[in-house]
Image (cartoon, rainbow, N blue to C red; front, side, top):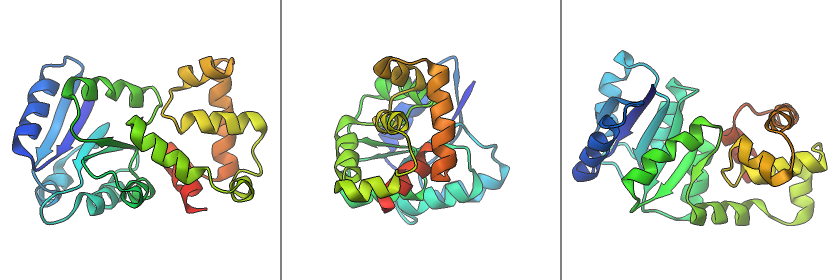
Amino acid sequence: MITVGIIEDDRPLRRSLEIYINNQKDLYITFSCNSMEAFLEQRSTLDEPFIIFIDLGLPGISGMEGISLIRQQWVETHIVVTTGNDNDSVIFDCIQRGANGYLLKPFNIESLVKNIDIIRKGGALITPDVAMKLFKKIHKPKDTYQDVTANLTARENDVVNELLKGLTYKEIAAVLGISASTVNDHLKNIYVKMDVRTKSELISKLLRK
């Protein structure tokens, strides 16, 4: 069972998410709030969910601040931003604060929920336009980028590039013509060399350079 949390002040959208998720046999909503304040009031009684969908434009405490607050409490939760804001600096700030995904509104709720499986299999949940912005930010002058990944092998760099596209281990394996277990081995080495533990930490480290 995949547990889901929702922090969204758009009542019709939040209700639509609740109805659709509740109709899925392998998904369960642990909480649904209209603000960060409402979430903070009850967080001590909540179990850590697998994934949280959070809107940026919340009243009171913003979704941006909310990412940091959630990450302070729950290290393993997958935080996915849902917003209409496609500003580069906002996207990068969210990722650096600990977001695992960034989806632009409007989106198809059915597709959104199906994409939870992407995260469950090790991928990152981002829309193509957001991915393009990340690539433009990450693919800086060659010497700068090489400074960041100097300790990685050519194949490890290939894996990083595919990982940043949001591909799962299996999909990376297919693209690179290697096994999924080999991809997993490369990622373990990459995380050690880059001194990170998660994909969001890896992306954040690349963006800071």
